[in-house]
Image (cartoon, one colour):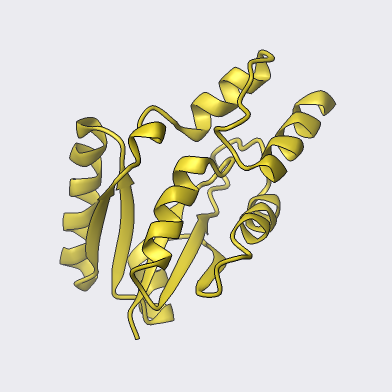
Length: 159
């Protein structure tokens, strides 16, 4: 069974993230989406909220599983029988950073990294950009799933 992981913070999950997850789901037996627990980073949504949103927006995929992780990704992979990481690349600048991570993951635990180019519709898209635009009242519909859009608007209305 081919099991891969798509790791990230997903704060919030965007249509770009879902593009990579859905394409990976079409190629592999199991895709684990691993939400990074990073207590040093201030997030808009808690880890539990991000996991819940991801479960909601990926529920139509029978082979996608949502989990949380902290520490080294290679340890998460080893504990769960995962042999490869799938990462989306938006630009050359993404590749430079991701290549270093891929080489280190391979050196540490022989975990392969597979790069998937992002759909050009989402090549500019990042969670931080979505948060920034939404914070100032900009329209981010079409950039995040409708369910996430509703949660994003509700959260920003609380602040």
